[in-house]
Image (spheres, rainbow, N blue to C red):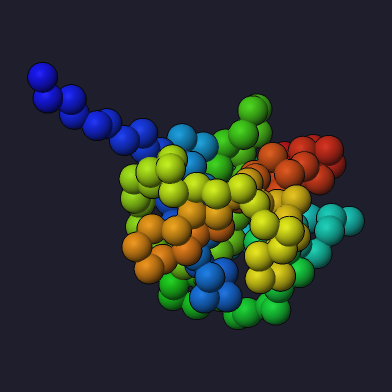
Length: 153
């Protein structure tokens, strides 16, 4: 009897920040948008860039570079806003570029290191190595915790 080994996979979206590749599970992603007009909201942290009107829905938008205290960068043609939906709120994440969607083998995911690059370990759920690529998996609930508390919607 031949037994077919079935590898468990999770589908993730790969995006870039400062030439590093990050991943978030696709089941929380509502869409990937080009940069659009962002309306600043007073008295919000600097990483909260404001709100966007996305097909009639007002969505807060944060700059992940600033959230992770990375070097700032001007937005360009590659910049994207990844719309994620957690629990009962949506948030747009400004990233340097969104590359692709891949099936990530669960066996390739390793526990978080103390620090990856300059992103605090509390924001990282794991690291995955696939062939020659290294992906940092984000813990979105931790990344977006201040947004939820502030109820910037």
